[in-house]
Length: 103
Image (tube, rainbow, N blue to C red; front, side, top):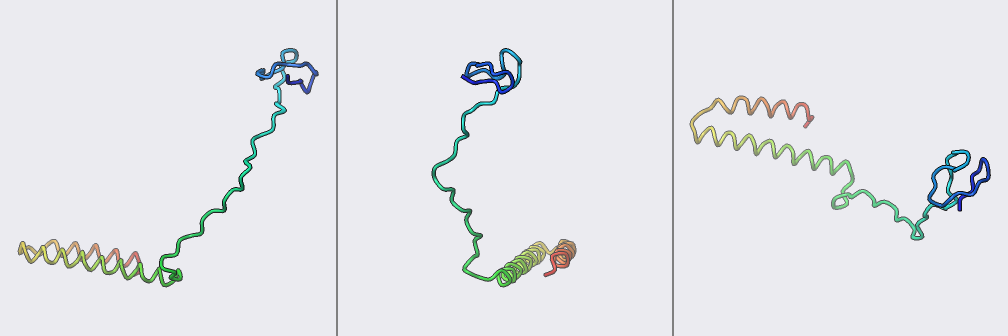
């Protein structure tokens, strides 16, 4: 039984409002509290124990090599097909990427 805090009328457990004064009933049930301690969040992964500045330099180096591989692939395609026009926009796009990424 739930007792109304306004008028003191006893109401059923399933009732949401008082049957006499229509005030919203507040349950006396306690919220569930987990018994097991909550584990702390995991620490951030640092690859191979490298400091952040060296890891940043390594990623930039990998990115520069990837751009070079793209340029070599476009150049090889141009040599194979004996068409040189795809090389010009590829160089321009890669130059813009290098400029905006500050590599």
